[in-house]
Length: 592
Image (tube, rainbow, N blue to C red; front, side, top):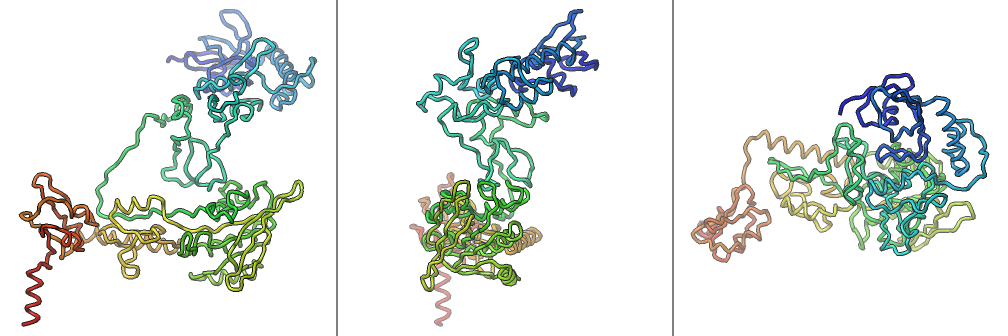
């Protein structure tokens, strides 16, 4: 489009043809008040606050700047006496209709209106139409709109909020409430559907996020992503506001997922872990009591980049006076995970130190055993003993709540039984932190199958040898590091990762790879093409040749385990260096 030159408040301004006066003024840094304008929606001119005086073809007149297109040579005055007087009258009328709305009070005060001359009403809606326009134009459902005429005109939902939730077209997305300039819209007045906030995964569910978000502060690449399941465009095929306003044009809704195939010589699996969901153990009250949280959630509370800016706070925003940390939630429990998660004791001690440092609250550690196994860990434990941390030995039986007096926070009672003498101890706290178990990722089985590696009974990836080769697997070139191989802390993870990197580099610098000598071999003349061996091979080393109708063995993948040799019904497979003739010859040599 061609550029047009016009004058706004004595300044020459250039803008594209078709641009409204309001947009041209904002682009030049000239402020024009408005309550019914939004750059993502069509102009409506309902509030009239954006009124300006224009001079065109020698004629002066007042127009609404949000929907009046610019003209070449147009002269615009945003602060002429007529404009100021008009806005003053508009502010008085708005204040008469909505005397309790702060944004209107501030506007009226700016134009010298303290008290309107007319009889006050008690409304919050100024009939700007922003809610109706965003619901129709961007969300595409028209769940809210104008009804009635004249003095009876108002914003309402179809059939005045139907009680049948199946007929309610509202998505409970909150777009109408977001754009409402006066706060007149409350979702509970529009729909009986319950709004579901999108909980931020990185914040462990303590904070909500938008459908367009950066996964976490140090994300690589550090760019926003779009949540397909929550994005309004993927739900209704409308919206696209972000695409229109992205200056670099980086958003492409037509982009499809790509599957890339990369040829590599070695693979390091560092797929991490999941934390145990404590809600399945109902006696802990997780999900029932607001102030029963997990260790990971508490970690985010303590972080300077967390939802509370590093301040330890209860659900109501107050500072806890007493905090209890419960060890082994899901760990060392035959009903869930019988292994020790290794990191829980030490991060519980760290959390205790932070609580004392930031709140000076009373801290209780409820444990069955304290396992401080690492370098200087015992010293840290002794330091906390001297700091006044209360250590209570016992297995938590249940956590209950006490109803506080009016205006006070509910407190929590933790009952713990000593496993040695059966004595039950009760601890009262404002907050309970559950030190949850480390467990495998939900898709660990699929990953193991994809890379032809094994899993232990607890689901973690199995190494070649726990002492002699703790990072290699039975598949050459595939290494496992970190908590996907088993629970471990940061120093052990770093050590494993460094060792795996060294082994990969050593393999690369060799240039040649030594293969197993005792691999299996197929006699094609005897092979019947039954494919029994194909399905049994644990290393996927056997493929079927469709042209020859026989199976082939990839010697680089074969480990000589002998499963195929034993299973072959036609005796076509033998182990190299372990043939029947060779074994008989060895026996004859021994007996000679």
